[in-house]
Each structure stands twice: as C-alpha cells, then as structure tokens.
Image (cartoon, rainbow, N blue to C red; front, side, top):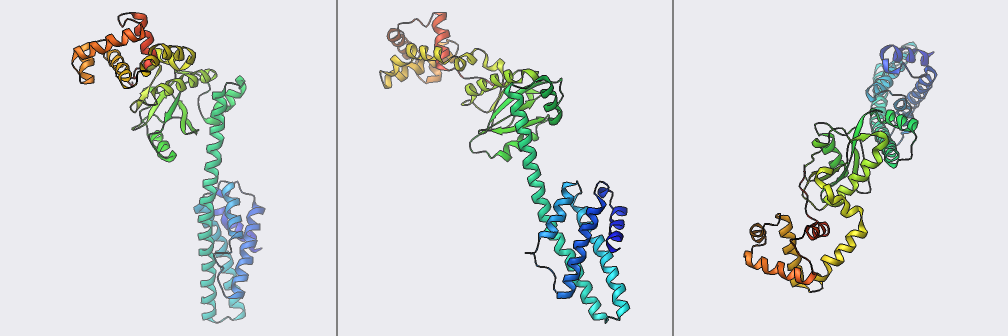
Length: 358
C-alpha cells in the first residue's frame, strides 16, 4: 500500500519515469521503507559506508535514462510518503513531540545520505557510459578506415556515428604538440568552427573525419588531411593523410593537405627509391664528416631558395662565392650537375624539402 502510494507520487510528478517499470519503482520504495524503519529503530542515520542500496537504485534509474535530479527528487517523494505515514502512526500511538521531531530529522538525514551517494554513483555511471561510448565510436571509425566493411555495414556504421551515409569526408591525422594531453586535443578539435563529427585517439595521434578540411586549424598541432571521398573510399583518404603526416610531422604547426605535400608523398611511399637516392646524393658527403654536412646543407639551401644563389647564401649567412665553391665541390664529389633537371628532382626527393601549410 505504502509502496503504491509512493509510486503514484513519483509517476505523477516526474515525466522522466514514464519508461521505468512500476514494479521496479515499488521495489526501490520497499528498500527505502526498510531503510527508514531501520534508521528509526536504531535512532541513527546510515553511515556513508553503507551505500549498496542507494547505489543500486541510482544505477538502475540512470540506465533507464532518468536524470540525477529526478532520481533524487523521486527518492525524496518516496521519503515524504514514508514520513507522512510515520506521522500518522505517531499520532495514533501518542508519541511525544520531541521524539516525533527527532525521528523526522533522522528521516531527512536518510534523504541527505541517499543524495550524497546518488550524486557520486551517477557521476561514476556517466563516466563509464562516456568511456564505453568513446570506445564504441573509436571502433566504428577504425572499421570504416580499415576497408573491410560491406556497403550495408558502412551504412550501419554511419548511422551509428550520426554521419551522412552518402556524404563526403576527409580523413585527418593530428599529431599532438609536445606532451599535450588527450583531453586538451579533443577540446581544441571540439571548439573548431566546424568540429569533426567523429574522432578518436589511436597510438598517440588523433584520427577523424571532417567535412571542411581548410578549417582544421588547431594551434600548436600538425594536422594532415586526406582528400574528400565517399565513405567507401575512406581507407584511401586515411592512407594519404598518413603519408602527409609522415612528411609534415617535423614541420611547423598547421594543416597540410595533398596539395601541400604534392610529389613529396612519393618520398615516403617509395622507400626503395629514397634509399637509392640517399646512397647517391647524401652518403658520399656524410662520409667526409663535418665538411660533407656543410655540402649537403648548401645543396638544401639552394633547393629551398629555388636555385637562387644569393638568397641561399643569405640563408646560410655566407658569401655567394663561398656557396658556389661548396656547390662545385659537391658536384665533383657526387658526380652530378646541379643544372640538370634530373639531379634537381632527385636531390629534392632525398633531401626532404619543407612543406608550407595551407
């Protein structure tokens, strides 16, 4: 009878309980009644160490989608029904006023006890749910980028991630600056003008989808963005973003696209060619020690300044004739001409010219 009255009060006042089974609510009220009786008999409010029943009720309601404020309100509504019945019984037996007051205070302390435990348990529940949801979305993203899903499964994954199944997205790879924490990076991404609809941290870097690659600008971080493609082609966009990141990881912070990387993509995609050119253009100079390193730096400066001797000399803080001398020595050592287009292309390939971000 008492449990039914409390359930009536809860369902009448709290719409969030509409999806909760009435029997479950009455079972919770039964636990509340037993706790009230035990408290009144012992003349002592429950200790914070006694938390199971409050935790169970909170966890059950949270899993049914009831917000914390309504969970607490529901408990106080049941406690009010219990208290009203206590007052009725106290009047029937002629309980002294001071004992009624003391007992009433004990019942309200039970309410405070429940509120404190419910708040903590709900936070734990929210954190657990958030972690599970993050892991679920990360796994779906990993599957989309893996390239092994059927068309039907791609559509299902898109629906689960709340992204457009027929939309076009770019895969981005973000390399955090220094020791930036994951939460800091996530916050930076979430505060972009057009935040990524899905992202996850994989092996120390952040990977996700974006519909607006030019706006993937995060202070202090290097971001590589693949081409925009349909969901079925995301693995290719991811492959290119990974190659771009490998080229740009030592560059200044900024957003780097395929247009920025251009032919440099091949330098990491074809390691055999890079190794061959390193043997031809770099190793002979390195074998000379410090002077050889100066020769390599001279060639790098020349290439970076579009073969302009004067600007390259200024970059190295040397006289143009000194630079000409070094370049001549390099040509003699390696057996090439820096006026040859083939030499320029191959030297640029192996010496890793820097990128300019978009």
